[in-house]
Amino acid sequence: MEQRNFEKLSTESQKKFRNDLWDVFDTYIEQNEEKKEEIPDFAFVETIYWDITKEKLSLREIFGKIQEHVLKEGYDNVHSFFQELSVLKMNSKYDTIFSEDDQDYSKTAEKEPEPTKEKLKMQITDFSRPGDHRDELVLLMMHHTSQQQTYNGYLVDANRFSMLPFNSEELLMEKEEREIAHAKRENKLLFAEMDRVIKEDKSGSNRIQIIVKSGPHYTTLDIDKENRSCFIVDAADDSRQYRLHQLADYSDFIDKVTYVKSPTIPSGKIDSPTMKAALQKDDCSCAIFASEHSSILAKEPDLHNWLGEKATQVGDKLFYVTWDQLSPEMVKNSQSTRVINHYIEQNLDQKGKILQLTNNNTSLHGFETTKQRFLQTVNQYCHSYKESELLEKLQQTSSTPKPKEESLLFNFVK
Image (cartoon, rainbow, N blue to C red; front, side):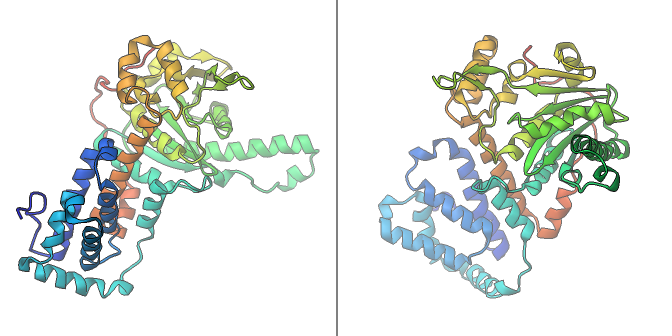
């Protein structure tokens, strides 16, 4: 049988053979993800893809699974991939490859652990525990973004400055006074850390993209040094972002803070007729929203000038805009079709664009598309780099600034 997909698998080495095999599966899945429900046996294609990606099984074990699948389902009923691969192992030109792989996997117990890779794969595939932290995923997406565009990313852990024990002075205060003083001290420490990031930034860029972790929650900040302004984007409109609204009261570098306020819209329910139109409705996807928003904001060179013209003032140094004022790219990942419908009502001139990005407002389409892209990125890095190399990538989250260009992506709505 002519091998249409796998005829160019390397015979040079076990490693190159595996890389070629992985490339075929990865390309196929990426090209067919949106129509996978229509493709028979696609689930098993994904199963074998993960077996190759995780590198836990030998080639002989993987091809054994394929052979069992073909025997169980019948040759004519399985995907063409498995029809081809079921006979590939019998080709004598690959004997050396399988022998080399057997020797390598006989030493599995001696292999160094790869905890970073395991964390990354878990952080993009397992959303069953809302309390999980996803720092490695955020840092990897920061690095990846910095390789694609001008980006200057930092991850700041606010947990280091939260739930601190009372100091001796606070213990002598009355309860209300003590809590106020304690909160101010924590905020002062947090914002001093953010000032340190701004002050010590050596990227040469005017803009800084900071993602702040509060508990297991992630919030996006975009800072403009020249304008001395900060834009806060929290997809869930989570209350943990509120302390960040006080940044201008403490910072030596920020005079103005603008945040995204979720509008109130009809819910369609009798008992609760209205709802807050936040984009994120679950309690475990904030790392995906924050990373995506951060990369989009970084592409808009005049972001903070636009905010200066369009934001509504609510305090001496505090302003807000709503999701309705932002671009389709910023709201495409909404986990609520009602939020998308409301966005269309407020922005009829953007209807075509938002419907394109959400597949005619199909539930979770935009979000799942973004998540799948993140998954492909994680798989690519885990497959391409050793553990030590991957750790180095997580520390490289900024790129060299490019000449100021007109934004082709963001196109603010209002």
